[in-house]
Image (cartoon, rainbow, N blue to C red; front, side):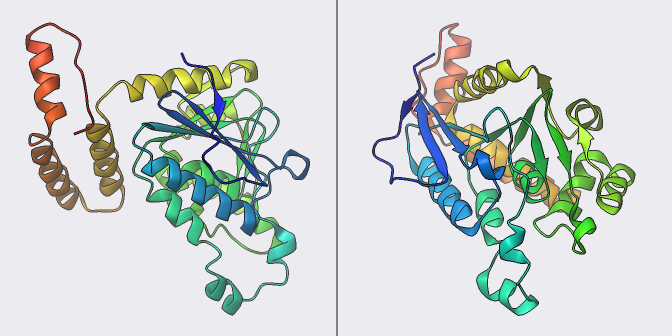
Length: 267
Protein backbone atom coordinates (compact mmCIF):
# COMPACT_ATOMS: atom_id res chain seq x y z
CA UNK A 1 0.00 0.00 0.00
CA UNK A 2 1.46 3.36 -0.95
CA UNK A 3 2.01 6.07 1.60
CA UNK A 4 -0.62 8.79 1.85
CA UNK A 5 0.45 12.23 0.78
CA UNK A 6 -1.10 15.64 0.45
CA UNK A 7 -2.54 16.56 -2.91
CA UNK A 8 -0.22 19.51 -3.55
CA UNK A 9 -1.76 20.23 -6.93
CA UNK A 10 -5.18 20.80 -5.36
CA UNK A 11 -6.34 24.25 -4.22
CA UNK A 12 -5.89 25.05 -0.54
CA UNK A 13 -8.85 24.21 1.66
CA UNK A 14 -10.10 25.63 4.94
CA UNK A 15 -12.63 22.98 5.96
CA UNK A 16 -11.39 19.74 4.41
CA UNK A 17 -8.14 17.83 3.93
CA UNK A 18 -7.42 16.06 0.63
CA UNK A 19 -4.77 13.35 0.37
CA UNK A 20 -3.83 10.75 -2.23
CA UNK A 21 -2.88 7.13 -1.52
CA UNK A 22 -1.95 5.51 -4.80
CA UNK A 23 -5.18 5.20 -6.78
CA UNK A 24 -7.26 6.37 -3.81
CA UNK A 25 -8.42 9.90 -3.10
CA UNK A 26 -9.14 10.60 0.58
CA UNK A 27 -11.22 13.58 1.67
CA UNK A 28 -11.55 14.40 5.37
CA UNK A 29 -14.01 16.91 6.77
CA UNK A 30 -11.85 19.08 9.01
CA UNK A 31 -13.92 21.12 11.44
CA UNK A 32 -13.78 18.73 14.43
CA UNK A 33 -14.19 21.54 16.97
CA UNK A 34 -17.54 22.33 15.33
CA UNK A 35 -18.49 18.64 14.90
CA UNK A 36 -17.88 18.96 11.15
CA UNK A 37 -21.09 20.93 10.74
CA UNK A 38 -21.95 21.24 7.04
CA UNK A 39 -21.62 24.95 6.35
CA UNK A 40 -22.07 26.29 2.84
CA UNK A 41 -18.32 26.88 2.59
CA UNK A 42 -17.49 23.33 3.64
CA UNK A 43 -19.95 21.85 1.14
CA UNK A 44 -18.56 24.04 -1.64
CA UNK A 45 -15.02 22.85 -0.86
CA UNK A 46 -16.18 19.25 -0.58
CA UNK A 47 -17.96 19.23 -3.93
CA UNK A 48 -14.96 20.85 -5.61
CA UNK A 49 -12.56 18.30 -4.14
CA UNK A 50 -14.74 15.32 -5.07
CA UNK A 51 -15.24 16.59 -8.62
CA UNK A 52 -11.48 17.14 -8.96
CA UNK A 53 -10.77 13.57 -7.81
CA UNK A 54 -13.52 12.30 -10.11
CA UNK A 55 -11.77 13.97 -13.05
CA UNK A 56 -8.30 12.69 -12.05
CA UNK A 57 -7.46 9.66 -14.24
CA UNK A 58 -5.07 8.37 -11.58
CA UNK A 59 -7.81 8.08 -8.94
CA UNK A 60 -10.17 5.10 -9.03
CA UNK A 61 -11.91 5.19 -5.63
CA UNK A 62 -12.64 7.95 -3.11
CA UNK A 63 -12.86 7.67 0.67
CA UNK A 64 -14.83 10.31 2.59
CA UNK A 65 -14.31 10.59 6.35
CA UNK A 66 -14.62 13.02 9.21
CA UNK A 67 -11.81 11.65 11.33
CA UNK A 68 -11.91 9.41 14.39
CA UNK A 69 -14.17 11.56 16.60
CA UNK A 70 -17.02 12.73 14.39
CA UNK A 71 -18.25 12.33 10.83
CA UNK A 72 -20.73 15.24 10.78
CA UNK A 73 -23.43 16.40 13.19
CA UNK A 74 -25.45 17.84 10.31
CA UNK A 75 -26.43 21.17 8.82
CA UNK A 76 -25.37 24.54 10.19
CA UNK A 77 -28.46 25.66 12.13
CA UNK A 78 -26.96 29.11 12.60
CA UNK A 79 -27.23 29.53 8.85
CA UNK A 80 -30.60 27.80 8.58
CA UNK A 81 -32.35 29.52 11.53
CA UNK A 82 -32.86 32.73 9.53
CA UNK A 83 -33.69 31.00 6.26
CA UNK A 84 -37.01 31.20 4.47
CA UNK A 85 -38.50 28.99 1.79
CA UNK A 86 -37.57 31.56 -0.84
CA UNK A 87 -33.99 31.96 0.42
CA UNK A 88 -33.39 28.21 0.54
CA UNK A 89 -34.59 27.81 -3.05
CA UNK A 90 -32.62 30.85 -4.23
CA UNK A 91 -29.40 29.72 -2.51
CA UNK A 92 -29.83 26.14 -3.74
CA UNK A 93 -28.83 25.04 -0.28
CA UNK A 94 -29.29 21.31 -0.97
CA UNK A 95 -27.70 21.24 -4.42
CA UNK A 96 -24.25 20.10 -3.15
CA UNK A 97 -25.70 16.75 -2.09
CA UNK A 98 -27.10 16.29 -5.61
CA UNK A 99 -23.69 17.12 -7.06
CA UNK A 100 -22.02 14.55 -4.83
CA UNK A 101 -24.51 11.93 -5.99
CA UNK A 102 -23.36 12.55 -9.56
CA UNK A 103 -19.72 11.63 -8.83
CA UNK A 104 -19.00 8.71 -11.15
CA UNK A 105 -16.31 6.97 -9.08
CA UNK A 106 -17.17 4.87 -6.03
CA UNK A 107 -17.19 6.73 -2.72
CA UNK A 108 -16.68 4.89 0.56
CA UNK A 109 -17.84 6.72 3.70
CA UNK A 110 -15.69 5.93 6.76
CA UNK A 111 -17.85 7.01 9.69
CA UNK A 112 -16.91 7.52 13.33
CA UNK A 113 -18.88 9.36 15.99
CA UNK A 114 -21.91 11.49 15.16
CA UNK A 115 -23.43 11.01 11.72
CA UNK A 116 -26.63 13.00 12.06
CA UNK A 117 -29.09 14.93 9.90
CA UNK A 118 -27.27 16.25 6.87
CA UNK A 119 -24.26 14.20 7.93
CA UNK A 120 -26.27 11.01 7.61
CA UNK A 121 -27.65 12.21 4.28
CA UNK A 122 -24.09 12.90 3.15
CA UNK A 123 -23.03 9.38 4.13
CA UNK A 124 -26.03 7.91 2.30
CA UNK A 125 -24.93 9.77 -0.84
CA UNK A 126 -21.83 7.58 -0.76
CA UNK A 127 -21.84 4.07 -2.21
CA UNK A 128 -20.54 2.06 0.74
CA UNK A 129 -20.62 2.97 4.44
CA UNK A 130 -18.08 1.55 6.87
CA UNK A 131 -18.54 2.48 10.54
CA UNK A 132 -16.46 2.41 13.68
CA UNK A 133 -17.96 1.10 16.90
CA UNK A 134 -18.44 4.71 18.02
CA UNK A 135 -20.61 5.71 15.06
CA UNK A 136 -24.11 7.04 15.72
CA UNK A 137 -26.63 7.53 12.89
CA UNK A 138 -29.81 9.59 12.91
CA UNK A 139 -32.18 12.11 11.33
CA UNK A 140 -33.12 14.40 14.27
CA UNK A 141 -34.56 17.27 12.19
CA UNK A 142 -38.11 16.95 13.56
CA UNK A 143 -36.81 17.91 16.99
CA UNK A 144 -36.15 21.45 15.74
CA UNK A 145 -39.33 21.80 13.70
CA UNK A 146 -38.12 20.78 10.26
CA UNK A 147 -37.57 17.45 8.47
CA UNK A 148 -34.84 15.77 6.42
CA UNK A 149 -34.42 17.63 3.13
CA UNK A 150 -31.25 16.23 1.63
CA UNK A 151 -32.68 12.84 0.72
CA UNK A 152 -33.18 11.41 4.20
CA UNK A 153 -36.88 10.58 3.75
CA UNK A 154 -36.12 8.87 0.44
CA UNK A 155 -32.81 7.05 0.95
CA UNK A 156 -33.21 5.93 4.54
CA UNK A 157 -36.33 3.80 3.81
CA UNK A 158 -34.50 2.20 0.89
CA UNK A 159 -31.64 1.31 3.23
CA UNK A 160 -33.41 0.19 6.41
CA UNK A 161 -37.03 -0.32 5.33
CA UNK A 162 -40.14 1.80 5.84
CA UNK A 163 -40.82 1.02 9.48
CA UNK A 164 -37.33 1.59 10.88
CA UNK A 165 -36.98 4.73 8.78
CA UNK A 166 -40.31 6.03 10.09
CA UNK A 167 -39.17 5.40 13.66
CA UNK A 168 -35.87 7.20 13.17
CA UNK A 169 -37.31 10.16 11.24
CA UNK A 170 -40.48 10.71 13.29
CA UNK A 171 -38.85 10.31 16.73
CA UNK A 172 -35.54 11.88 15.80
CA UNK A 173 -33.75 9.12 17.71
CA UNK A 174 -30.38 7.89 16.51
CA UNK A 175 -29.11 4.33 16.27
CA UNK A 176 -25.75 2.74 17.07
CA UNK A 177 -23.30 1.44 14.49
CA UNK A 178 -24.23 -2.11 15.42
CA UNK A 179 -27.96 -1.47 14.88
CA UNK A 180 -27.21 0.37 11.63
CA UNK A 181 -25.31 -2.70 10.49
CA UNK A 182 -28.21 -5.00 11.37
CA UNK A 183 -30.63 -2.71 9.53
CA UNK A 184 -28.51 -2.62 6.37
CA UNK A 185 -27.44 1.03 6.60
CA UNK A 186 -23.74 0.19 6.95
CA UNK A 187 -21.60 -2.56 5.43
CA UNK A 188 -19.18 -3.23 8.27
CA UNK A 189 -18.47 -2.18 11.87
CA UNK A 190 -14.89 -2.20 13.16
CA UNK A 191 -12.92 -0.71 16.07
CA UNK A 192 -12.21 2.97 15.51
CA UNK A 193 -8.47 2.43 15.17
CA UNK A 194 -9.07 0.02 12.26
CA UNK A 195 -11.63 2.08 10.36
CA UNK A 196 -9.37 3.78 7.82
CA UNK A 197 -7.33 0.62 7.27
CA UNK A 198 -10.52 -1.29 6.47
CA UNK A 199 -11.76 1.52 4.23
CA UNK A 200 -8.47 1.54 2.32
CA UNK A 201 -8.47 -2.24 2.08
CA UNK A 202 -11.91 -2.25 0.48
CA UNK A 203 -11.06 0.73 -1.71
CA UNK A 204 -7.91 -0.95 -3.03
CA UNK A 205 -9.90 -4.12 -3.72
CA UNK A 206 -12.37 -2.09 -5.79
CA UNK A 207 -9.59 -0.08 -7.45
CA UNK A 208 -7.89 -3.28 -8.63
CA UNK A 209 -10.75 -3.76 -11.08
CA UNK A 210 -11.09 -1.92 -14.42
CA UNK A 211 -12.17 1.68 -13.76
CA UNK A 212 -14.61 1.76 -16.68
CA UNK A 213 -16.53 -1.28 -15.46
CA UNK A 214 -16.52 0.07 -11.89
CA UNK A 215 -18.11 3.34 -12.97
CA UNK A 216 -20.57 1.56 -15.28
CA UNK A 217 -21.67 -0.82 -12.53
CA UNK A 218 -22.11 2.03 -10.05
CA UNK A 219 -24.24 4.01 -12.49
CA UNK A 220 -26.41 0.98 -13.18
CA UNK A 221 -27.07 0.33 -9.49
CA UNK A 222 -27.98 3.98 -8.93
CA UNK A 223 -30.29 3.90 -11.94
CA UNK A 224 -32.12 0.96 -10.39
CA UNK A 225 -32.80 2.89 -7.19
CA UNK A 226 -34.65 5.63 -9.03
CA UNK A 227 -36.45 3.64 -11.71
CA UNK A 228 -39.08 0.94 -12.16
CA UNK A 229 -37.54 -2.52 -12.58
CA UNK A 230 -38.04 -2.67 -16.35
CA UNK A 231 -36.39 0.72 -16.87
CA UNK A 232 -33.48 -0.29 -14.67
CA UNK A 233 -33.04 -3.57 -16.51
CA UNK A 234 -32.96 -1.75 -19.86
CA UNK A 235 -30.33 0.68 -18.53
CA UNK A 236 -28.26 -2.22 -17.19
CA UNK A 237 -28.43 -4.06 -20.50
CA UNK A 238 -27.31 -1.07 -22.57
CA UNK A 239 -24.46 -0.37 -20.15
CA UNK A 240 -23.47 -4.05 -20.15
CA UNK A 241 -23.32 -4.15 -23.94
CA UNK A 242 -21.24 -0.96 -24.08
CA UNK A 243 -18.45 -2.48 -21.99
CA UNK A 244 -17.75 -5.01 -24.73
CA UNK A 245 -16.36 -2.19 -26.84
CA UNK A 246 -13.68 -1.37 -24.24
CA UNK A 247 -10.07 -2.52 -24.25
CA UNK A 248 -10.28 -3.43 -20.58
CA UNK A 249 -13.07 -5.94 -21.17
CA UNK A 250 -11.06 -7.69 -23.88
CA UNK A 251 -7.94 -7.62 -21.72
CA UNK A 252 -9.78 -8.91 -18.65
CA UNK A 253 -11.40 -11.85 -20.40
CA UNK A 254 -8.26 -12.76 -22.37
CA UNK A 255 -6.16 -12.61 -19.21
CA UNK A 256 -8.61 -14.92 -17.46
CA UNK A 257 -8.51 -17.43 -20.33
CA UNK A 258 -4.71 -17.19 -20.54
CA UNK A 259 -4.39 -17.55 -16.74
CA UNK A 260 -2.40 -14.35 -16.28
CA UNK A 261 -2.83 -11.10 -14.38
CA UNK A 262 -4.73 -8.49 -16.44
CA UNK A 263 -3.19 -5.13 -17.34
CA UNK A 264 -6.04 -2.65 -17.33
CA UNK A 265 -5.64 0.77 -18.99
CA UNK A 266 -8.97 2.41 -18.23
CA UNK A 267 -9.93 2.37 -21.91
